Image (cartoon, rainbow, N blue to C red; front, side, top):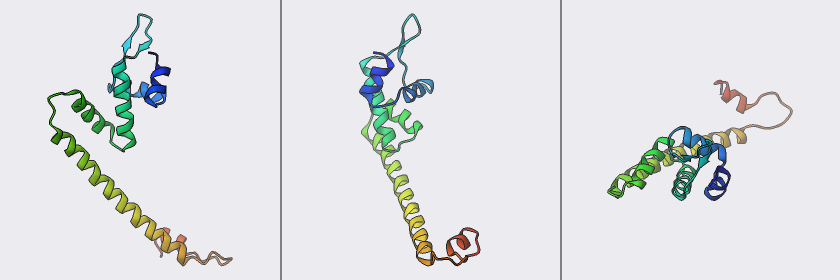
Length: 129
């Protein structure tokens, strides 16, 4: 398969597929003329990577998860630990976003939004609030 067909089947842009090859996440075969030749197993790996990235796993996490995916002697506890650590990270980001939202909502409520020059939003951003 060529990169266009693989991209369509895996739901990834060709540029992403080339990047994954550049960082050795996938290794498509090369024909005599140098063109990439993808196998069905490459489609599965790329689909796997696309889904893992959509869930926010880092490239390094994806590398480890892909290695575990290919290792038939893996222990599911290894996979669960990586996913659990990522879940903690997501929860921390959600807490940070909620805090940011609460602060910004309070600043928006405090701003009169009229023709006066004083603005609690700008005061807070400048550290004078």
